[in-house]
Image 1 (spheres, rainbow, N blue to C red):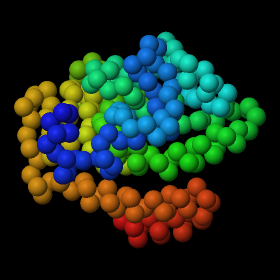
Image 2: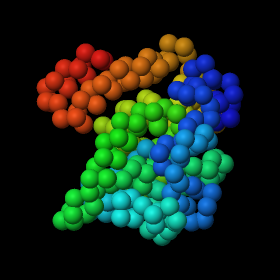
Image 3: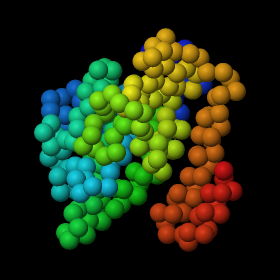
Length: 249
């Protein structure tokens, strides 16, 4: 990671100057237990988690307008699913103070059957449009590649290759916009940036050929599609959005 930050600035440099501006909310993993922190425009390195929520009934713990103040005081370790715990451990191991996880850092809806919550709806619409920047500016993206849901964790028991995260639609944007990725897979841990890749079988890694560096142009195309995303949250018809997105790409 340090080598990439120092030597790959021309290709792997963050969207904005380093260190990046923190997202609206992040998790302070330096505190014990971790707690939610309001970014308030502060510049500081941060990690970000890419994960599968899963289809089971055990949905991730969430931050809502009702428990936001409690989350800012503490996020008890024992209520965090295994993937979140492992992401916190990995972030601490990288000596990074802040971590962004969607269900904790974006206000979520109350449980079904509860009263409507316009604050969470407004927050989700605003924050979902910023995810491109959040992943693009993150110091590193931690991928829970092996986990089909958040109860599995990042640190898998070694076995046959399997990467459920690669079947997740959001994964394209999250991976493409990330300058550096630390992926916890079933069979090994891997590192990749736009210039270099390494894994536990080849810890010395290898540089990627120049013709392999296709991701930066794709990042530009995804950025052009932002207008379609804005139209979507504003309620435009689906066929109009699809046409705008197709033209952008």
